[in-house]
Length: 184
Ligand SMILES: [Zn+2]
Ligand SMILES: [Zn+2]
Image (tube, rainbow, N blue to C red; front, side, top):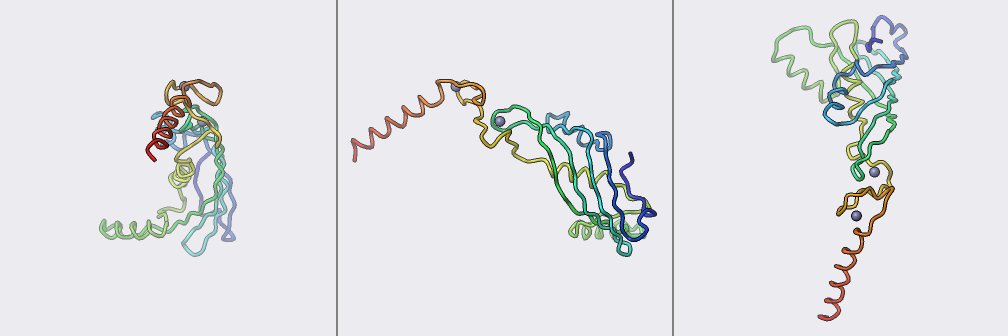
Protein backbone atom coordinates (compact mmCIF):
# COMPACT_ATOMS: atom_id res chain seq x y z
CA UNK A 1 0.00 0.00 0.00
CA UNK A 2 1.34 3.41 -0.90
CA UNK A 3 1.48 5.87 1.92
CA UNK A 4 0.44 9.01 0.17
CA UNK A 5 -2.37 11.44 -0.31
CA UNK A 6 -3.62 12.23 -3.79
CA UNK A 7 -4.97 15.76 -3.71
CA UNK A 8 -7.53 14.77 -6.35
CA UNK A 9 -9.24 12.69 -3.69
CA UNK A 10 -10.04 15.66 -1.46
CA UNK A 11 -13.18 16.68 -3.21
CA UNK A 12 -15.33 18.42 -0.66
CA UNK A 13 -12.28 19.79 1.10
CA UNK A 14 -12.24 16.82 3.46
CA UNK A 15 -11.13 13.22 3.31
CA UNK A 16 -10.77 10.39 5.78
CA UNK A 17 -8.26 7.74 4.89
CA UNK A 18 -6.82 4.72 6.65
CA UNK A 19 -3.38 3.27 6.02
CA UNK A 20 -2.24 -0.17 7.06
CA UNK A 21 1.49 -0.19 6.44
CA UNK A 22 4.26 -2.73 6.38
CA UNK A 23 7.68 -2.15 7.86
CA UNK A 24 9.18 -1.74 4.40
CA UNK A 25 7.44 1.62 4.13
CA UNK A 26 9.54 3.00 6.97
CA UNK A 27 13.21 2.12 6.45
CA UNK A 28 14.39 3.91 9.59
CA UNK A 29 12.46 1.51 11.78
CA UNK A 30 14.43 -1.40 10.38
CA UNK A 31 17.71 0.40 10.99
CA UNK A 32 16.68 1.11 14.56
CA UNK A 33 15.86 -2.55 15.21
CA UNK A 34 19.16 -3.63 13.64
CA UNK A 35 20.98 -1.41 16.13
CA UNK A 36 19.26 -3.16 19.03
CA UNK A 37 16.59 -0.47 19.41
CA UNK A 38 12.82 -0.86 19.49
CA UNK A 39 11.34 -3.41 17.07
CA UNK A 40 8.05 -2.50 15.42
CA UNK A 41 5.49 -5.14 14.47
CA UNK A 42 3.29 -5.10 11.39
CA UNK A 43 0.88 -3.71 10.52
CA UNK A 44 1.43 -0.05 11.36
CA UNK A 45 -2.02 1.46 11.22
CA UNK A 46 -2.86 5.11 10.67
CA UNK A 47 -6.20 6.85 10.42
CA UNK A 48 -5.98 10.32 8.94
CA UNK A 49 -8.58 13.03 8.44
CA UNK A 50 -7.40 15.51 5.84
CA UNK A 51 -8.78 18.98 5.38
CA UNK A 52 -7.91 21.35 2.62
CA UNK A 53 -8.05 25.10 3.10
CA UNK A 54 -6.73 26.76 -0.03
CA UNK A 55 -3.31 25.27 -0.63
CA UNK A 56 -2.79 24.19 2.97
CA UNK A 57 -3.60 20.60 3.83
CA UNK A 58 -4.02 19.67 7.46
CA UNK A 59 -4.30 16.16 8.81
CA UNK A 60 -5.52 14.96 12.18
CA UNK A 61 -4.39 11.43 12.71
CA UNK A 62 -4.06 8.51 15.03
CA UNK A 63 -1.50 5.73 14.96
CA UNK A 64 -1.86 2.20 16.27
CA UNK A 65 1.19 -0.01 16.42
CA UNK A 66 2.99 -2.46 18.64
CA UNK A 67 6.65 -2.22 19.45
CA UNK A 68 9.04 -4.56 21.24
CA UNK A 69 11.05 -2.66 23.85
CA UNK A 70 13.74 -3.55 26.34
CA UNK A 71 12.95 -2.75 29.97
CA UNK A 72 15.44 -0.31 31.46
CA UNK A 73 15.30 -2.06 34.84
CA UNK A 74 15.24 -5.81 34.22
CA UNK A 75 16.51 -5.77 30.59
CA UNK A 76 13.72 -8.14 29.50
CA UNK A 77 11.93 -7.39 26.25
CA UNK A 78 8.20 -6.74 26.25
CA UNK A 79 5.49 -5.76 23.79
CA UNK A 80 4.14 -2.26 24.14
CA UNK A 81 1.11 -0.85 22.31
CA UNK A 82 1.42 2.62 20.79
CA UNK A 83 -1.77 4.65 20.42
CA UNK A 84 -1.13 8.28 19.69
CA UNK A 85 -2.90 11.15 18.02
CA UNK A 86 -1.12 13.89 16.11
CA UNK A 87 -1.60 16.75 13.68
CA UNK A 88 0.26 17.51 10.47
CA UNK A 89 0.12 20.45 8.08
CA UNK A 90 1.36 20.59 4.51
CA UNK A 91 2.03 23.67 2.44
CA UNK A 92 3.19 23.98 -1.19
CA UNK A 93 6.95 24.17 -1.62
CA UNK A 94 8.09 27.50 -3.09
CA UNK A 95 8.20 27.57 -6.88
CA UNK A 96 11.46 29.46 -7.36
CA UNK A 97 14.49 27.31 -6.83
CA UNK A 98 16.89 29.86 -5.39
CA UNK A 99 18.67 27.84 -2.75
CA UNK A 100 18.97 30.60 -0.16
CA UNK A 101 15.30 31.45 -0.40
CA UNK A 102 14.29 27.86 -0.11
CA UNK A 103 16.41 27.39 2.97
CA UNK A 104 14.86 30.40 4.62
CA UNK A 105 11.37 29.25 3.84
CA UNK A 106 12.12 25.74 5.03
CA UNK A 107 13.32 27.14 8.33
CA UNK A 108 10.17 29.20 8.69
CA UNK A 109 8.14 26.12 7.79
CA UNK A 110 9.89 24.06 10.45
CA UNK A 111 8.93 26.54 13.12
CA UNK A 112 5.29 26.31 12.13
CA UNK A 113 5.52 22.53 11.61
CA UNK A 114 4.51 22.99 8.00
CA UNK A 115 5.70 20.22 5.72
CA UNK A 116 6.36 21.37 2.15
CA UNK A 117 4.84 19.40 -0.73
CA UNK A 118 5.62 19.74 -4.42
CA UNK A 119 3.23 17.67 -6.50
CA UNK A 120 -0.41 16.77 -6.50
CA UNK A 121 0.52 13.70 -4.50
CA UNK A 122 1.82 14.14 -0.96
CA UNK A 123 4.20 11.45 0.25
CA UNK A 124 3.40 10.60 3.86
CA UNK A 125 6.19 8.16 4.70
CA UNK A 126 8.52 10.64 6.36
CA UNK A 127 6.02 12.47 8.56
CA UNK A 128 4.34 9.22 9.63
CA UNK A 129 7.68 7.58 10.36
CA UNK A 130 8.54 10.57 12.52
CA UNK A 131 5.29 10.13 14.46
CA UNK A 132 6.11 6.46 15.07
CA UNK A 133 9.57 7.33 16.35
CA UNK A 134 8.22 10.06 18.62
CA UNK A 135 5.62 7.69 20.07
CA UNK A 136 8.29 5.31 21.44
CA UNK A 137 8.80 5.83 25.19
CA UNK A 138 12.30 7.11 26.03
CA UNK A 139 12.76 5.16 29.28
CA UNK A 140 10.68 2.02 28.82
CA UNK A 141 9.80 -0.07 31.87
CA UNK A 142 8.00 -3.41 31.47
CA UNK A 143 5.79 -2.81 34.53
CA UNK A 144 5.70 0.09 36.96
CA UNK A 145 6.30 -2.51 39.65
CA UNK A 146 9.30 -4.04 37.89
CA UNK A 147 11.92 -4.93 40.52
CA UNK A 148 14.81 -4.89 38.07
CA UNK A 149 18.05 -6.80 38.48
CA UNK A 150 19.97 -7.39 41.67
CA UNK A 151 22.93 -5.01 41.47
CA UNK A 152 25.21 -7.60 43.05
CA UNK A 153 24.40 -10.95 41.45
CA UNK A 154 22.44 -9.71 38.43
CA UNK A 155 19.46 -12.03 39.02
CA UNK A 156 16.08 -10.87 37.69
CA UNK A 157 14.18 -9.98 40.85
CA UNK A 158 10.79 -10.21 39.12
CA UNK A 159 10.94 -14.00 38.98
CA UNK A 160 13.75 -14.84 41.41
CA UNK A 161 14.99 -13.75 44.79
CA UNK A 162 18.45 -13.67 46.25
CA UNK A 163 19.97 -13.01 49.65
CA UNK A 164 22.61 -10.54 48.58
CA UNK A 165 20.36 -7.51 48.06
CA UNK A 166 19.29 -6.21 51.39
CA UNK A 167 21.71 -7.75 53.86
CA UNK A 168 24.81 -5.66 53.08
CA UNK A 169 22.66 -2.59 52.60
CA UNK A 170 20.95 -2.99 55.97
CA UNK A 171 24.18 -3.86 57.77
CA UNK A 172 25.79 -0.70 56.55
CA UNK A 173 22.89 1.34 57.81
CA UNK A 174 22.89 -0.42 61.15
CA UNK A 175 26.56 0.40 61.63
CA UNK A 176 26.03 4.05 60.71
CA UNK A 177 23.05 4.27 63.03
CA UNK A 178 25.14 2.81 65.84
CA UNK A 179 27.93 5.34 65.31
CA UNK A 180 25.43 8.18 65.29
CA UNK A 181 23.96 7.06 68.58
CA UNK A 182 27.36 6.89 70.27
CA UNK A 183 28.60 10.29 69.09
CA UNK A 184 25.44 12.27 69.79
ZN1 LIG B 1 11.33 -4.85 33.80
ZN1 LIG C 1 21.50 -10.82 44.28
